[in-house]
Image 1: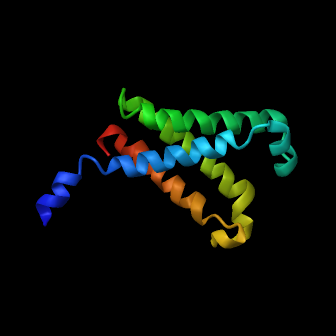
Image 2 (image 1 turned 30 degrees about the vertical axis):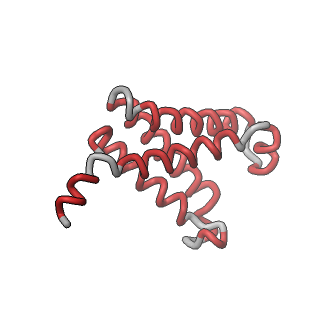
Length: 124
């Protein structure tokens, strides 16, 4: 049984990497047109642009990092961490933990996934 897990070990990063990247690409793209995102969130337009672009860059970097340099994965992960800290403290914390109530449960999971990829890079 241990040999099965050992054989899978070099490949399991793909599930974490691709699901996190897909989530960031989906949510980054979904923030366009920006004026609707600005109205929904009540944030200044420059901040909204920065968040949307950062989410897209994070998603691309997490995927590209697997095929390029370790630093690309770590950069994508660092962006994830910054965005999730902002999302937790600016939007979700006041709603508690439960995602069904708008809480920070999902954002915390993405934050920790970002921390893991930042720490491990392409050695995840």
